[in-house]
Amino acid sequence: TQLLEQSPQFLSIQEGENLTVYCNSSSVFSSLQWYRQEPGEGPVLLVTVVTGGEVKKLKRLTFQFGDARKDSSLHITAAQPGDTGLYLCAGGGATNKLIFGTGTLLAVQP
Amino acid sequence: DSGVTQTPKHLITATGQRVTLRCSPRSGDLSVYWYQQSLDQGLQFLIQYYNGEERAKGNILERFSAQQFPDLHSELNLSSLELGDSALYFCASNRGHGYTFGSGTRLTVV
Image 1 (spheres, one colour):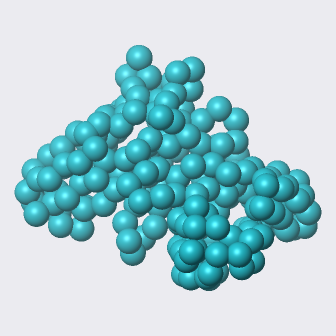
Image 2 (cartoon, one colour; image 1 turned 90 degrees about the vertical axis):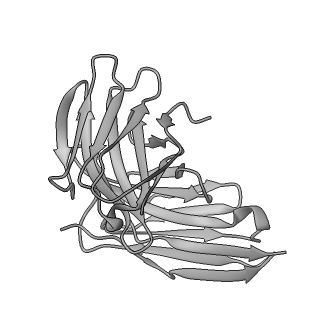
């Protein structure tokens, strides 16, 4: 069974701080995606990484795919209250079925 | 509006009953994925359909079934409902790597 463990589970920080969320697995994935979910809504895709070692930047968010394609990280610089939400990593395989991580609930206090 | 439509948004029903959740994928997307999200289990993959055919199955109970119709909309049928079936049910469609999720159906079994 493929599992994706995220850490930390919960994170409460002040506006302006930096943070990193980790997504780890013992399985290799062909792609790794990050989603953000707000209360009462479905997850929204932030980024897809497909190459081991790949780094992608989306404004203040930096995503990295591990060299062995088993892990990923999401770094947020100068967090803002609008970044608050549930962050989910998801690993993809041959059938396009996604396995979702355990989630990191981020709260950014103004 | 993500383009993926789910109805109803909320459903309250009694144990032992049967309900049907409906999903219309984004225009042009042939795949539909169903996920269940609960506090203790996270986002769990249930089943995938592609152009009317079942493509992959996950942790879907025998009491649950799904189908995809010629117009590509999909229905998830949940029967003999138990209290533990209370959860958010999401469908998603995709084109390439990323999923587009609907807003979900919140099912409460009382």
